[in-house]
Length: 477
Image (tube, rainbow, N blue to C red; front, top):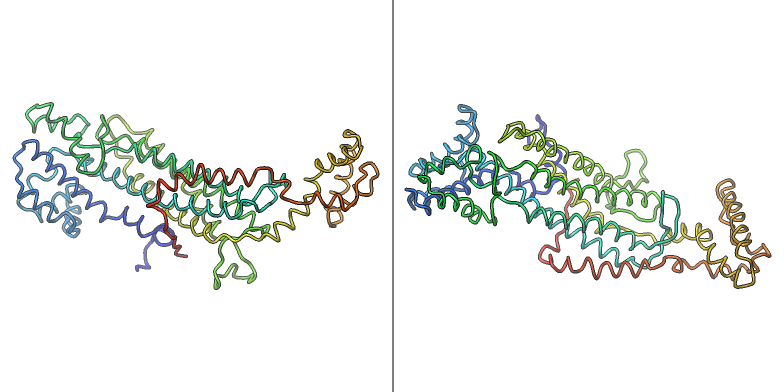
């Protein structure tokens, strides 16, 4: 490994080998050659003077790319597509005269970009499905574990650990729905020439409109797509890139929200992300167990959310049939957005798969706050015992404030139940009040909602994608 030049952390530390291959030179230039073969086959099938021998020669060299020849040629002509046309022709002397016939650079460049994004979205889809599956297992396991809920990060009416996990899951489910819509809508550019008018094919096929209409559908079918975009300039609309990276930004937002919740819960010592036996939490404080995976999720997620601005601005500033100010930006923003979201999903899968819950700590926090949560039930019990609802409401308010001062100012335990038991207005003993301190009485339908969500919403989606399930994430550092 070279140590004297910059290497992107996205490939060095975060993204999987699978995602790195999708954006590799091999994937790019092998796809270019597949596109040239598809074009030549289509032109042959539609009547141009192209032989099967030429097609076979192209196929024989579709994967053994002579990079050295292409690089040397590009130093001379300063054009990447024509350099690879030349290099392919060196390997295929019989076919060199028909390579790229009638096409412009965007035929290979743009169609490859669409194909690469489609493959990358499929890998993201697979990992997203597995994150949803792991979250649903976690939610089901802890569906009836009462825990304090938080609004404004202040203790609120209890929920369950599993119910909270359904909130994370539902957002990822929305992302999956959006991803599958955009993936299903992707089309190839096809072969439409320098300004999208197919003028070169009008010349090649002597003005035969019906034959020219067959070119794009045939190329799409050979490349595994249903259709091409019906109209274009020289390029496909850059709004396509915007739609794709918006999907990644949505997943990043969901991951960021989940990772933030886990970080806060780890601070409370209620939940903890995986921590390996030999892992070091701090160089100075040896006892620390920092939520570094969740922090990394948040960090990379912010990058992806901001990265989505790049194609939006690029799309908005394209002039007429095309300008080239998209090129350098696309080379950075799209691959790096995918590499980052790939790393994020691997981290999410790793964290959820090893998430540790500490019920005793959760219960301790719950019981410290539960007297406040139970006041409505206590008031109802006191009314049944003959009390006046309006008077009791005011007394509970006053006693709650007094108990709050005891906790915050004096640093003592919550003594609200003792205060209520000592107040004759309530006519309740401490034993009767303690019966109200069962946490499961205050979680509402959290367990039932969790079960229904998993069975009716999540499981059908997992069943539909069962062939994608079962992957395990590996994180590099």
